[in-house]
Length: 197
Image (cartoon, rainbow, N blue to C red; front, side, top):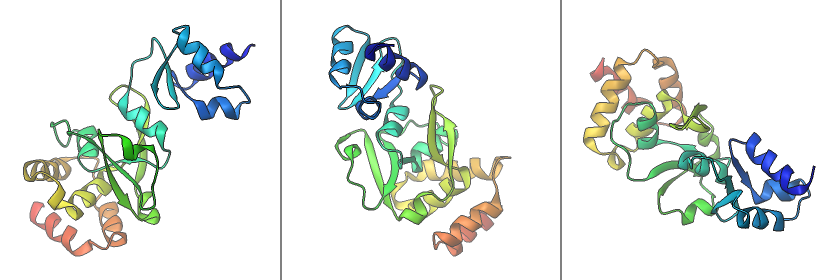
């Protein structure tokens, strides 16, 4: 199999996306990516990111591909769980506090810096609205986050999300309090939950 065919197969096996890093790691010169773009078999999405021409562009997946530590959070997570029907103006993404990657340049992303040990707390994989795998905080961690960051969340979105969470059959109050304790917000979370219940 020649280099171009290998690149196209790699992209097809990765939901239509490929990175320059993936290509280099397989020992393939990057010039073949450029040639495939010229031949209109790949589209350059952004620096180092490419997709097959017939692939639908999924911003959630693109953000996830750009940094494996990135986790969708706050209002973006609420929207993904249907706890808010308002599309957030930006993608809210949690990253390690020492993050210095290319998401800093993305005007459509609002970065939320967090301690490394808190970053992995409650992370799950779901499918994006376009059917591709992305990382997001589970419902219980998301509720902890909006309580912790209440001043960043629109009051109407906050209120609706809390009501939706309480009504949800997928909530796990035990998990919620485990997360709240680890995030040092147990008392305030307890206050909100007792009022809602």
